[in-house]
Length: 245
Image (tube, rainbow, N blue to C red; front, side, top):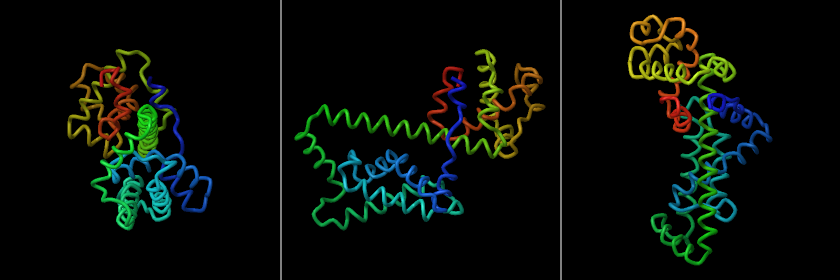
């Protein structure tokens, strides 16, 4: 399970965006393909219905908007690329719907979709929705791994190091998780990890039933757990539930 959590991930999203902006068509095309579930989900949030990438014009608008977001994104804007891209997609889709004279307002699209469902095979619709959900969840899991990998680099850590540093026995892992939670819940201790990238071992020794030597040995692993606890990592936290998280 630990190896699965800390397995190598693809190049970070920021690196992909930078390559695409610099004229790497392969990187751009890969992003347009890789993030289709994200695009469909962003579009569906506007249309308030399931979006079929192969049939719905709104998805094409979202795809074009995502491509535009790649070109115009700047990390200096203070938001992540995906937050920026979601905003661009939603604005473009809303503009598209407003300019379509033959389309009903967004607020009533649910009713039209309900009528369409009655005219199609319910099993096919259910299967399509389930596939979309699975693809969306898979995208979120991969995105979390990529984002976490990028964060680890800021602390001069790598997945390979975490695999080597991960406690091999269950009780040792559970102990490390409890230490990480204690650190996370203490404002001062947590700030030492998040702001300074260091585990305050001297401050921990008298507060946990773990030796200084063990804390030092598990330092990288505990820091990684604190970063997960402090971040919006829904799926990564799920992976750790079996070890006391």
